[in-house]
Amino acid sequence: MVLSTPIAQVIGKRKRPDTAAQRRAIQIITGSYERVLHGFTAIIQAYADPKVEFSDDFLFNAHSTSIRSLAVSPPSSGKRILATGSSDEQINLYQLQTTAFNTNAAKKRKSWTGLTLESEPRSKDSIRHRELGSLTHHTLTVTALSFPSHSKLLSSSLDDTIAITRTRDWTQFATLKAPEHKQHGRPSGYTGDGSLGVNDFAVHPSRRLAISVRQGERCMRLWNLVTGAKAGVLDFDRRTLAKLNGGKKDLGWREGEGRKIVWRDDGQQFAIAFERGVLLFGLDCIVQGYFALDGRKKVGQIRYLPSMSEDNATAEQDLGASDAVDGVTQTRSILALSSEDGRLLFLDALVRADTDVGDANFAASDDQGPRSIALLCELEVPYDGPRTRIKDFMVVPEPAPGDLGAWLHIIAACSDGRVHLLHLQSSDVKCPSIQPVANGMNSNTSGSAEQITNGPVRKVGTLLGTYETGHRITCLTAFTLDGN
Image (tube, rainbow, N blue to C red; front, side, top):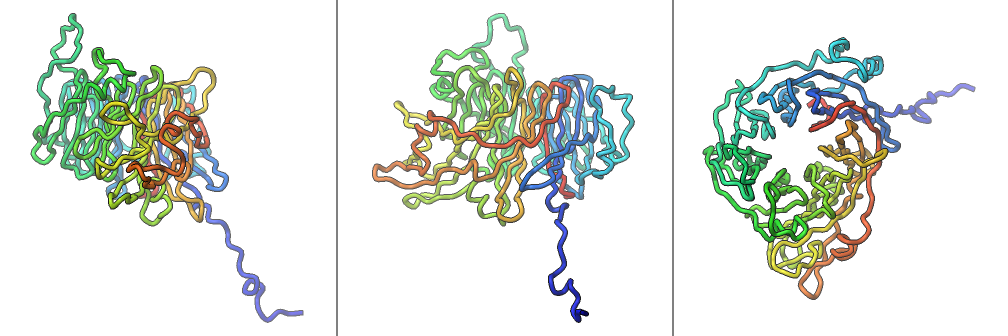
């Protein structure tokens, strides 16, 4: 029997699965106390049953002393710039590629574990990475680096300055210098010059305002980036600082200083991390809420979960939604916080547009002042033996194909040299919805604030893989290798 119509036209051609669309590559870069700058790629193979493969990209001594900070610029003309800061007072600059390495070449590449840096030959794929030079704008340890745009680089140091550098010719065209201050609770035997340096800074998404926190100061400084001058100084409330330190009123030296600071994507809220807690501020610099760690645990790093793309409505509702209560618009966001016992805590950071409208996610307080914000869930990194500190972490969002929703890839770097790649869906950390009640307060569908804060904490996240660097990690950065 002869068919007049080809079989392929009758039953249809069998389509091969698009493995390239299901494969994602993330560039991970770590700095360490051993002066080693280590870059490796994590290739995630699939979404339904995700698997990850790690391959080394570069490994060398970038500085003469320990590396303290890392920053990667936004993509520009298919290139990214990596800046590394160290206690040797220098800022090294490197050009990075934005596409993944050849997978076949990566599999043939030998592991660098246990080998000296000089004995390992340079890979052919690493030609795309090249060194640009060094900056010597500071005289002490570089503490923080930031690329607010591809044309500007901001750096802070223990010399009490924030340098603004133009990336076109790498010229320092502005310097923000804070005046000498009197440290609170400074020991009587201290013989320093009164300059303890900038701990961290954060640039507003509009790139017109910056906020910095310094050592030994219980305040934050606002900077006008348009004029390059100081915009104001705001002191931290002593009662609020006491809540972060377990009710302790007589704070010791450096106990009330800000350690980390970060802006939310929309620029309507920022968070400042202290030694044992975090404060949330609105755009008016008024404290909106606080969260204190239990016991004597310390905060490692804080980051807002990034908002997803506009074409993913489900992710947009999960990570950052806007609800209206009695005509008042309230924007929700989630703040991630790492602790020294190997946990990532996800907090419900709520911006209230009207101060007269409360929210049950803020636990009730006996006295006036900021209220404790709710703990939504937590993620624990695996450990063998004693728990290790999470020195730094990054959150890389990615919309998954089909109906799987949006995914969050979390890269956590621990002090024992391990880098854990974990993932969770955005619905796992969804904020409870807002509903008005008769007494003028708001309630949520998942329980009261006391139940969320003090009850059993929900565990989320799944471990994809662990990479052993062999060095004591101090900082980390990561971005998606998408070719942009």
